Length: 291
Ligand code: BG6
Image (cartoon, rainbow, N blue to C red; front, side, top):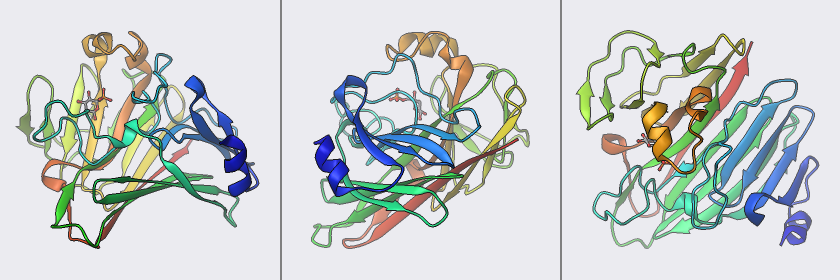
């Protein structure tokens, strides 16, 4: 399979390898940046501009197995987010992250970046995910509802981006100060915007709705800011599990909560997308860093 992929998608700076757990990954390495994308879940597991620290966080305890999600990087949550609306047995965050995606395309761009495109079909939806590794990490999730689908259908999606931080106690996130949110710690509670940047002092699990704001993650310990820009995404989810929830997750190290947080570009809950047969929706997230 690796030889076949190599032959079909031969682009400078892109190669295919057997990764953790024997799962196949695309490795991009150019003068601008390096990155990795597992075919399992179309899951970006690494992004690092040249000369910079890794931008994405990966758990040292992540599983790499066909029926399990990868912990860290950018899981794609689709076609639902969190628990399934009606089927309590259905996998959390949708089935997209539990299946191998097909490689559809690979392009070497004029600016020195490389784009790999992956795709899968779930029910009447066909999803494609284009990942561009360059001076920025650009991700575009395109969802189309088949023209012969019997009726309009809704879906939720999140690019569940795990970011690497020096110390969760010292970082802050700007951009959501004026957005109301759902607080999901210990239940689901509607909260009113408090005008403050987000800081982390305990478990934090928030769904900000009706916002297309850019988020800026300030990290004094790493002497950098990570910027998350997005389009066609009305929800932003911010998450850190803190101590007790980390301990409950078998694929998450007990102390790892101190070195990560998630800023997820999403359309979930009241911001779910409804497509008519034949319609398409594209959500993008662009991650960059500056000193
Ligand atoms: C976040 C949710 O997006 O994902 C959290 O808001 C959840 O509630 C977290 O715990 C991780 O989910 P999972 O299924 O990858 O463990």
